[in-house]
Image (cartoon, rainbow, N blue to C red; front, side):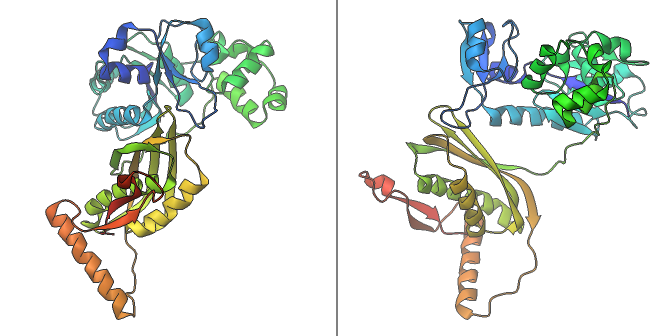
Length: 395
């Protein structure tokens, strides 16, 4: 299969520049979200003029090379949203689009000859899908890794096609282009293996002895062999809700009440179509620039807030927050229809269910929750407004 690789170098930095053009003239380092309060800060992206930096490098090491820089905390939801917009545009030109990583796209080209008779027309169509604020590099080859290397060495805003034997092209490339961790890259250099040609010349035994199962993959990639399949993304409706808390809190109950309110808003949209949640992503942002995210999946679609919150509470209790929370959000990534259910034999339960259905219909007609209940949040607080909160009664 012919594969087109599109690289958008320094994509997170481009997103920040699009949002705040003033940083375009500043030397900037974007930091990865902090997993825990005491975790080491790592570099997610940086300005091209900064030398000796790599993505994933510890911040202290990066600052030892460049002192006068501007530090920005990564806004991953914003980057993903901008990247998904580009992927949506590319899917209008090819049905086989894989968003491998932020700023890295693979597109299957087989079967597109009738739409794009030659590569120039194809590349022009793909370039039109990418905003001008993001410079692009494009390469076409017979595998994902070769397409990536071809794009990496293509002219700015141009493209390159690899044909024939790839060994002469790969021979002198540095080992740093391999899609492996910084630890393994450093280990290759420690063994005196600085180019792909040196790695490909080794027998598989020594590499597997030092790198385990990864060693075989390293040798195959260095020789130009890549059987990694193209995995086009599965397009599905995504519902997002987020809010900023009225005050920074470390209380789990306060965070849960916020998530419950966000879920209630989402279910108003879902119940109108009789659908539930199969998978949802929870995320929070703390006052010390920490970012927390966790995926939650359900065996059966959660059709109301009660069933969803019982599972979400388990996750929130098992995976604590990295610090005081100031912002929270949900991203529903999987929807499903309800399974067949038998109604309750008890008249009191059936009456309660009918009442809740009537309240849902009222919320749908008026566009917002109308009936609320008082829920304890921080009953020990000295501030009366923080002791209780109003939660929508519709489930």
